[in-house]
Length: 264
Ligand SMILES: Nc1ncnc2c1ncn2[C@@H]1O[C@H](COP(=O)(O)OP(=O)(O)O)[C@@H](O)[C@H]1O
Ligand SMILES: [Mg+2]
Image (tube, rainbow, N blue to C red; front, top):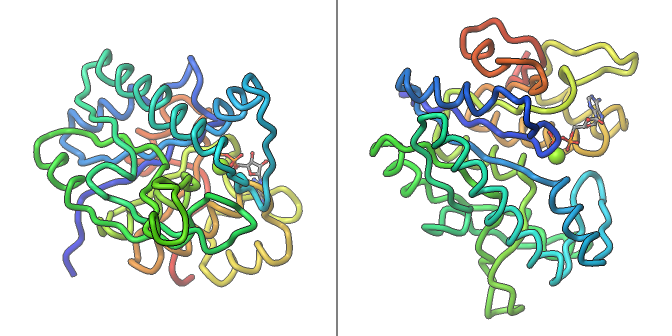
């Protein structure tokens, strides 16, 4: 079966720091002609700006409950500030990046079926046309997790929806038939009940871990994302983004962490 060379990298909000080598690694991959699509979070920065603006914030199963004001801040901070900071940092290191959101080129359309989460999209459809055009032109797309509300003007007036970064990364990886989906996060991998890193996990065990509560908070979205990506048999990896050159090690097959596969 045809398999693209594309790699999708999700940069967790929790690992974006000054001493981070991730952006340097991304530029090196681009120089080696590896087609890379980046999806970023930025949850901490959103929480910081929400508190500066005195807007309270709440999470359900690791997903932010988004009201109208929160959505405005999410869009401004993620698709604005964080996205442009990343693009300029990549550019400064000699890379070619284009910062967009899931809304641009109508890449991602979503609906907020679960009203408990407010304006957070869950069911997503992806049109990868713009991403392929950018990759073919030698650019690294850097995507903020915001999408178009597929029902805007129908049920409500919100044109945009917030999306969890892990979920959008998985849907994009599946739509691109990506070779690999890599989550850079702030733990060495997925822990089992005794806090040992699990090296391989299949979709069935991933579901069990969510149900049993062994995985909680932000890890639930990552496991669910692995399940989504596995539909298209793309390989999902969860690695420690705090380790220097974790991404290059991963590409060279020296990476530690957890692999989510379709079947064990
Ligand atoms: N079983 C588990 N294994 C590893 N981490 C877990 C597990 N259950 C919950 N977590 C939490 O998930 C967090 C990673 O998700 P998150 O905070 O959303 O990071 P990111 O910014 O990378 O998305 C970890 O820091 C950890 O606190
Ligand atoms: Mg997260």
